[in-house]
View: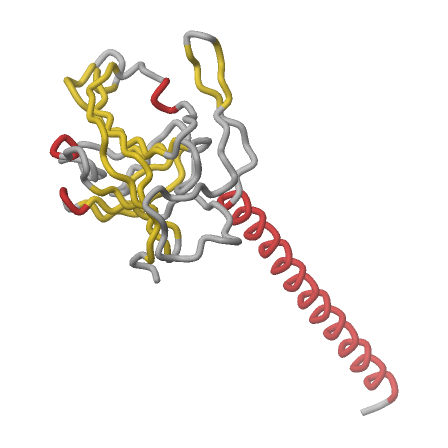
Length: 225
């Protein structure tokens, strides 16, 4: 190999190293960007920062999400001190065999077999209104037998290793246009909503809603413990 060949070989080697170095740096940068996006997305899910407004007879009202846990009336078998409210992950209603995951919803409910937590409503265990919607029929149905619930029945809304337990207090059918069901409350309650009545083809929705409300009762170690 002569001097020219050696020089060309060294140049090619340096070029390869530069290319490999650039690809490596690009890969690291991509991983950093993906990590940041994932972190921001997770933080937004765990501590939502957006605003949700409900149209009422008195105009647009912003939903306020309480950010402090309330003391359960019947006490707690787990230590709640230092815990931060989080969106619900599961809902269990033993009387009607509901054991479903819970996902965030705004205007659109989950299109798969799961309950939707209304963004802007309260988080489990706080002094406010935890609003959960579940389809009554179809492939996404989770609240098919909601009308069978009776006063005193248990609704456990879970976050991680804790079940926040509510007891049913009322069951009502209302017009589908009612929006006050989503409004904040001074006391810790859960509001379960599903479709009722007949399908309104013109409005592309059921004409009624079945609404179950329950009062916060206790906190205990859950199935995720």
